Length: 304
Image (cartoon, rainbow, N blue to C red; front, side, top):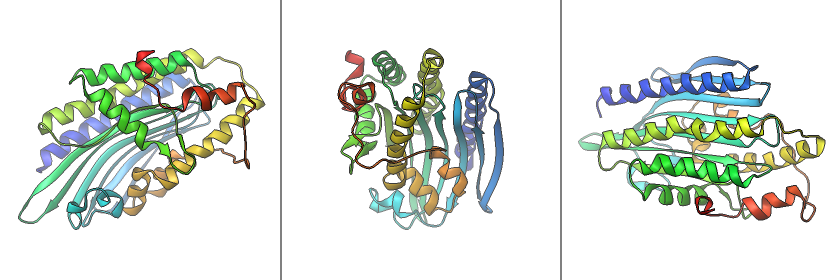
């Protein structure tokens, strides 16, 4: 695929990075993003922006990367074996937000484009991305609004996308060794290359632009709720699940590490503070127990 397509995507992703950082900083009111430009090879690098110790956001990363390689790594060919041995370009933006308050959910978003090439064969390209929500103390109206916004974004294209990509998200962000979901899901899509480039690119842009429209209203609604040590300790414990998923299962983390990306930028997805507790069990009928009984099991939130 020729460079104008890549440059078009790059221009959008850099604009999206600016837009998300500006809105998060304005919402936080205190924290500021620092920027690090990096290069892992002559044609590979990125622009990482991180906020730490904000008034609302304990840590937020908004990272752009554009990497090249002579051979796709195992994480990219595990479910696409026909692509093994091809050279590639990968360009994307990843967002991870770890709030201070246990009543504010962690959230993650990612939009990306891959192209795999081989001499004398047509290039293979696809888009991927989505966003998901990980609450510590759940609120039904927040879960409903999150999924309602996700559906509205998808319905601009067709009325089947939301159901398909919600299920993909539920299946993907599942911690198999714990037999539980990471959060309440959202959207996840990959291998998107039909009906044509422009349609796929439009969908990717819609998801990227729509992420904060789903997330920030929840932040505004819950940011002033009082919390104490009990809630903080439960938040830190549940953050452990986030770490387990990202280090064991997440393809994006593995891809970044296997392609020689900047380690500090890749692992900004991990929370700054976390704890594990042996055989923890929440008190029955407690707010902590309700996360397990009422929010982590898969639900059709928009029907509620």
